[in-house]
Image (cartoon, rainbow, N blue to C red; front, side):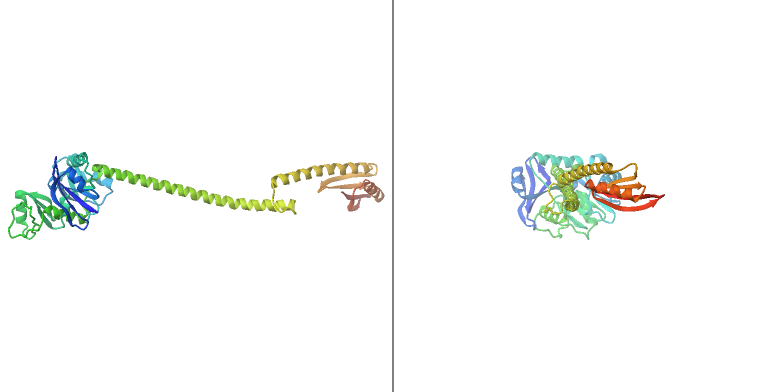
Length: 380
């Protein structure tokens, strides 16, 4: 994708100085003052970068352990309060982790009013852009560059921009560190210094393209598009979390259903086993609850009827003068009675009477006790 660079130093009511280069750094549209209409045409299908002049800002270093962004935005302004002329409330402090080295922050300090003005002015003219940065970020360490009437410096003893006499004095003091000079360089220096071909703006754009410049639109100064991006990212994260929640819900339900099906299969097998106990010839389990309940009800009714029948027949056969009933039990359609008789003849007599009443009689026990006969009969 191509890149369009707008140099805010030349921003006015009619337009702005801009140029366009390819991703490889080849010049597509040379630097020229263009109207906003021309700029909008030029920036189509491009990333647009706004290059602010470092003369309107300060580049400061601060030794401080790396802090989370929220804490850093509170701590940094007050740590630099003595190094800035304006109130920290009026200044915007920009930083990033890329340039944090040896426990030192590199901080760009710009007026909040200036950043807001640039963003609002460009928005009013429908100029879209991806970031606002400083021309200083084109410099490599220990590099100097003269862009028109400004000397950009990236040295250990000073970082920032100087102009006029201060710039010339700095150059004379650092003779071994020669500045880069271009066609548009307006600061008078030693004529023996070689001039680079082209304009400083071409060089700055090409260097920034590969330098990952610091975006000044951060913290309170987030641009509308950046805010929208964050909101969009928030929606995406929320959507992703909802998706994960939904998938986890489906997974939990699927596992629950699987477990329930296994339990159901186990119960079905148990029901089938019980069903075949009641209906051994059945090939299918059909309405097990109804059929087994019906069978149990029928058996219960038959059992009750059989009990009263056996008891009635026993009462008819029993002779109270010769027989004493000691115990009576009913189980599995069989009436078990324990009798005490005066002799075996009386016992045999009652057995014969019961048989005549069409009962099956089975003597399971017989013994003598205190000159009496004790016997247990099963009546079926």
